[in-house]
Length: 255
Image 1 (cartoon, helix red, strand yellow):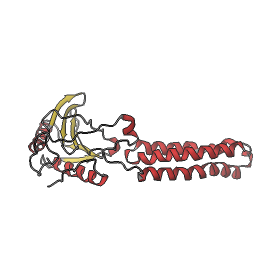
Image 2 (cartoon, rainbow, N blue to C red):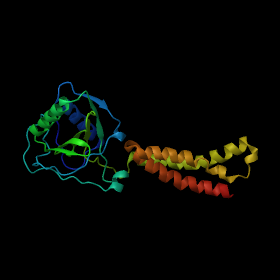
Image 3 (tube, rainbow, N blue to C red):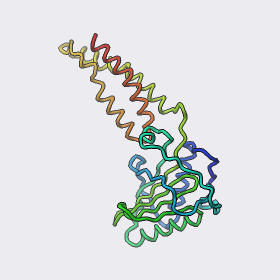
Image 4 (cartoon, rainbow, N blue to C red):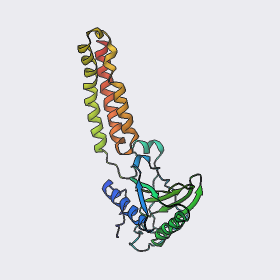
């Protein structure tokens, strides 16, 4: 299996997804019969982008791509927590899951073979113990992070994270969210107010009906903000919907 080295800068999402899937498949081949039970990306823990403790190698190092030359690892920019939440500095593509049927000595053997696979390709590997049990951290010089975390008798969790994916100034998800928010902001107060007043004449004069769309709107926004894949859309939805919707609801309810 071959992998192209990154030529500087953050990768696009398609390249990042491809790179993550390649490294996930390569890791699973390290131990015969290794089986992955996928976990949705939103439930995977974001790996720490710490500097490796071992020697640095070139960005082309990868199983099947040959050994690397020392001291050519590109630096990793770690955005702040707030910037990461709203997509500033890019976001990492995550894939992974439980490594099933690795009880007893099999787990230790799998850890050893995975470590040997990546070290033989020139990647620095940290093998540490902490609150999460034994943690294997592979620092791919292209910016990818591969972690294997196991605690007690539980099945280890394999996670592969891409480098931060480059963000465009006008990101499609954000623009789509803003446009959707503007539409909901115009339609929501009218539907929430006019509909119930038409069906229930006794509610005439109760201006609070125009705000009835807000709980559902906030629920949808909360779901989209919670999922990393839809977070940019959620930010746009919140901005567009709140800006127009609250203004329209305030005007019609005070009329």
